[in-house]
Image (cartoon, rainbow, N blue to C red; front, side, top):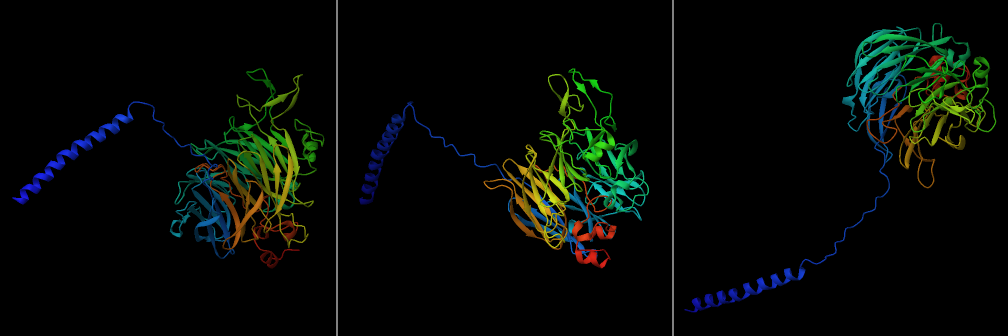
Length: 546
């Protein structure tokens, strides 16, 4: 009986509570109604631009009888993220392909290595590529998913396909002393093999470039690997650059201080009889561009802005000795490292909407500038800094030179420098001392962030220069690797993975600067001495040294 009453009372309470709760909930909903209810949407700050997604790939070596070492440096942290020490013995040259994902080395033991330049790098992923027997590979070009190399023994261009490993496909006969292949970084329709001609010694174009014969460029159609053109060049052609649009090739002739311009659309020299384009503008062509007053005197060609030292003129040096260049798409300028002149040349290479060399005019229709307009800037701290290479930030604002011989000790026991040049104002901004005697500078930049990586073959340190922030262009840090640094490349110049434009190797000799400076080696090194990375090794090979 008592249990029944308790159960009945509990049910009675539930009947009272449930309607009361339902009424309260209805009242709350009615209070909301259809009236305005403020909604707060937070606005998050955008923050600074993201850091470039890039790596610096470094090849180093402890000597010709030791395996080379690949070191991968992360941009954002300046830290080593991967390493492998299974490269062939004594690597001599290095490059990265157009995707930025694969690297290649040619080594003293005659082997060619192929490896990833990503965080997947491990020793088991370092592959060996088969080359033709008794070949002597020298200049490499690595567009996307391919590899081209010159063979000094066979006077041929070797074509490889794929990667991991690359596979030898064909040898294409060319002229004597082929030193490099140049072409677009992605899906090239045509490449050019640069040859120096018969009778050129291994260091002729280093020690006496003016004595070399005229070179030749061989145009090769990629679809069938057939030679489709032979184009005359200047003396001792040592390096060439393809414009990103594939319209022009610029060949640096160290022996006569000129640039040969190839119109790769027509597969011929960039020469023509002046004519009017579809916009009724006068078009002139420029098969040769002079870089020194000696070249002006020899060719009779003057830059559109004049060769002298007046305001807005080219300020050409007496001699130049071009050895390396980069093309900057943001400004359509070619920036050239003039090793013998201690300068850089900043040259306008703008084309009009029809693919012709573009000119600028005064009110009377006279040409005042445009394609070929040149500005020369002295770099370094000493009279003979010998800039061995140059790199330009992606936005075209500043250039950085590797001043190999800018050692104020005068005897090679000190260090070289990197100069910073304002490209727009054509003015030297500052010169920074780095570790060792630098031969290579490369850069990555997007928005306000950027870094320059400096490689000195006589030093185990990579110098890293920060280009942005409140105090730009300072030495950010130095990073120790195993053995002396042979060369360095970045996987992208603009912070976008898969877009590497620096796909060419630079082995010492045949006009390319030696690994050691002039102060360390003397003025007439042998080919073996030119490739040494230590003064001790150079001394033991019998060279006259500091």
